[in-house]
Image 1 (cartoon, rainbow, N blue to C red):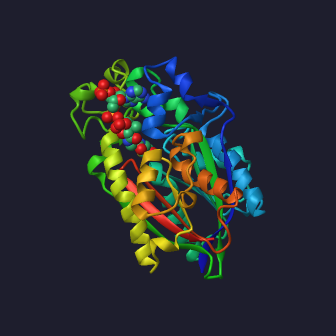
Image 2 (spheres, protein in one colour):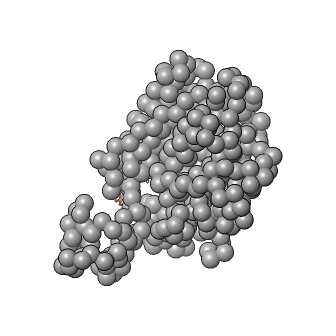
Image 3 (cartoon, rainbow, N blue to C red):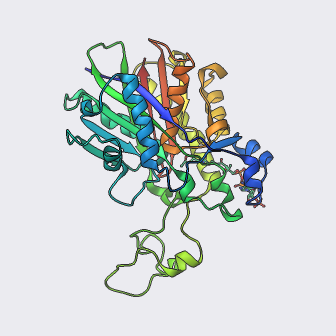
Length: 350
Ligand code: ACO
């Protein structure tokens, strides 16, 4: 028994935000952004009208239609995001409500694995399918980053990178050993958890650093989620040590891809299409050259969408298929690295 991708879909908001638009709100330039990241533009959802949940719902509808399944055929939902509508409950149940697919009360699981969220989600779905527990899993990766970024110059190293979007797949069992998920490899190392993180507001109480840094009052009863100091110092946005992320990413991407290939008894030369998480075009190009892959064997769309975190891989995979670049029998490799740090890869025989 294997897990196959029975359908895919994606949704990106209509509004295109060019690098030039950032020039008017912060100290940056189109040239800097393109040179360091490869990004030319990204999409931003309609604030107050669209959310991570609604973007995910649009992608889910497209994937269900592509797979030819109805809402109530879905027996499990996995939703990966780092920009949830609410702290809790998760976007999985919100999307279930949004799509009016509560009739069969399918379980919904939210996962918090940032850039590698889609690969972690695929791995979880693969286990459920292989054990026979579920037959139609809806896996969604979605982000509405634009609601949570610092658009002042202080936040420029992060805000110019991220964009909004969603991608989804329907996963089903197959008896055909020549298709489907070959394997998944998952890793993490929390040593650098704060180097790429969205820390406040939160329940940490200064535990990982010190109370004073965040302005926690002396109290035995907690009850402080957001302090005045966090607000005054605007410590309420994502932060990123870009150089460390870059350095780790270019090491871990090739490692985890090779590890998956080795486990399957395959070689880099067996890969037809590599779809890396779209973190930075320079990272993808480094990985491509390290593995010796041709330009037409790697799908990049960060130029148009920026980094949509959990959504980059399903969006890119869907685009590549629609462009006729992935065909029956092809070996597709997806890989990601990001906050946590968490990273992973998956090999899929189309
Ligand atoms: N516009 C203009 N200048 C900027 C900007 C900006 N948007 N952002 C930073 N700078 C400045 C910095 O302030 C710094 O100025 P200084 O020299 O006067 O101090 C200078 O540019 C260089 O900054 P660095 O951080 O050293 O620039 P670097 O070449 O490392 O590029 C970048 C930054 C693009 C973030 C890079 O480190 C990177 O891509 N790292 C990987 C990050 C990544 O991929 N993140 C996403 C993955 S994680 C995830 O998906 C959740």
